[in-house]
Image (cartoon, rainbow, N blue to C red; front, side, top):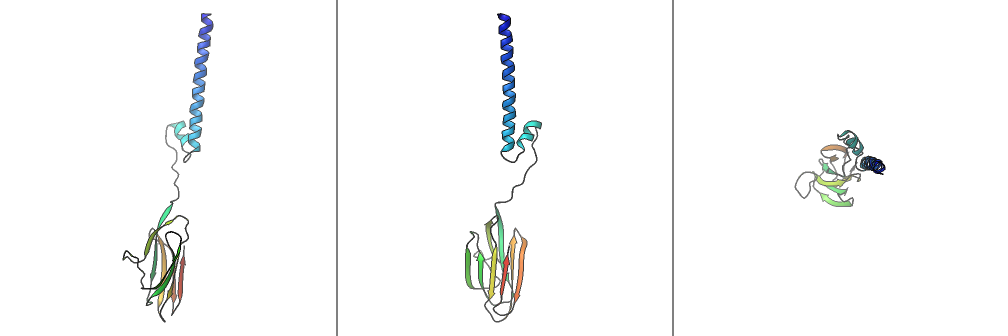
Length: 152
């Protein structure tokens, strides 16, 4: 009877070891399916897996309107995605902060658009859209009452 109890105890311990191993493997599998997928690599090798970069959720945008026109009527898509219009703005265009251009943060994937119509009978207008200082769109119009448009 004592020998039978020892065999049963060894069997019970072996079962516990197998269950623990299965739970560890299941935990590693679940970790690999959440986050960036490097959990299984980290669990199996003890090192972190590759870092997956995620696209930014926002971007810094600047709209610029410059040129020799005496003024411009402006239409743009603002930081909230709304269309905004302003009549008779000075060129170069500047924002409330006094800096040249209109500066704002836009959501990733948001449409970027600015247009300007010359309010005078002569002159040029140039528009530019910049994302984090990088030009993504530029265009120039020439002549009285001409319109320039940039999209990005």
